[in-house]
Amino acid sequence: MAESPAHKFGQIIGDLLELALEPHLQKFARKHKLYLDKKGERKARSGKKVSWTDANGNKHDLDFVLERGGTENKIGVPVAFIESAWRRYTRHSRNKAQEIQSAVLPLAIKYKNSSPFVGVVLAGVFTEGALTQLKSLGFGVLYFPYESVVKAFTRFGINAVFDEKTAETDFRKKIESWNKLPNKEDVAKELLKLNKKSVDEFMSSLSDSVSRFIEKIIILPLHGQENVSNRVTEAIDYLQKYSEDNLNLPLSKYEIIVIYNTGDRIEASFKDKKDGINFLEIYS
Image (cartoon, rainbow, N blue to C red; front, side, top):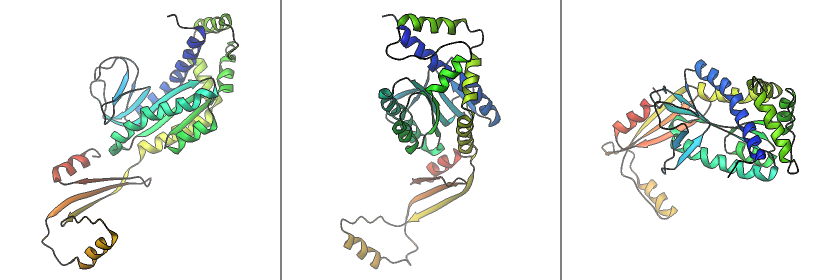
């Protein structure tokens, strides 16, 4: 089935978001000695998609991933997952927000030891509820309102205004005008310029996330036999009778707490010392 002109023009705007973001993220990656993975060929993975697998074995395709230690030939540790989306109508915005969180959050959970930044770049018409929902879940949100998208296209002679009543012939004219543009990057730059404050805030949040440093690491070796109580009274009774003078108890586990200058905490428990060392080597 042939792609409708309306859908094709929507895809053009979606591609424009990636066109706008990529140079910014590439520059950011160089500055922070990170690798930016984006759609296209890469020797370290198969296919052209940026696909990551969550703890349940489900694959998620993303637009951009920043990796520490990554190269063209080697997958690194993810420090940022960034997705982008365009929607023209409010009725689609909440579903898209949920779709994004379903793709990104399982990956953030799997790679929680590197505490990756989760970001989303949206354009078009998104309700305040959809934006608030994403922010409440910890997403860094960069939003290009529909009016600014239209204004960026207008600057280069393209009327990007449309609704459900727009005729296919009008969409074809818009697409034709876009295809004739010699430097499509100029439209992307204009979109960034029109939303400079929001772009700067988003990049600042990303910078804070990947630039944070470890303030201290707490290692607590725990000795003793675990006690499980079914009632509060039993637990109280156990504590009252517990002898703190017994120094010959077997090792139970190692509690490790990594604390960052931002206040973020990553906590982990290991019964085996080697597993604890492997965990800490992620941060070396």
